[in-house]
Image 1 (cartoon, rainbow, N blue to C red):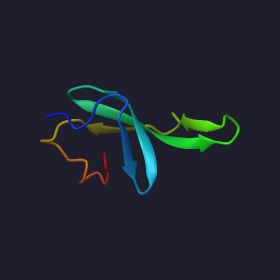
Image 2: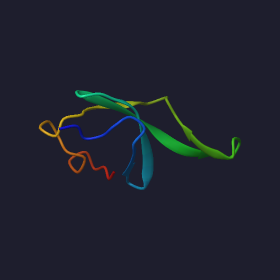
Image 3: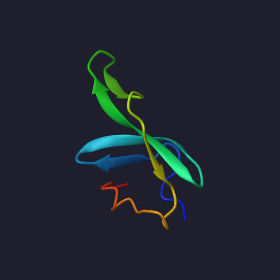
Image 4: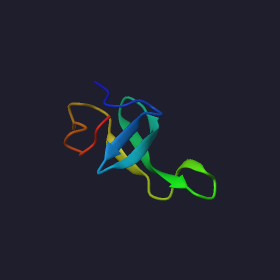
Length: 67
């Protein structure tokens, strides 16, 4: 069973993360920060994180995320 879908937003330690892409096997997330210059939230692609997207491998709780 998939944990997340593309464009989901996750929370970890009060930090928002956007799911950039998700398929049946993996998902990639990037931090979302507020940009004073842009005046809105922007996704930072500098340090993406990759995780397995199958509940048999891990859970969002084990990765310290909330959906």
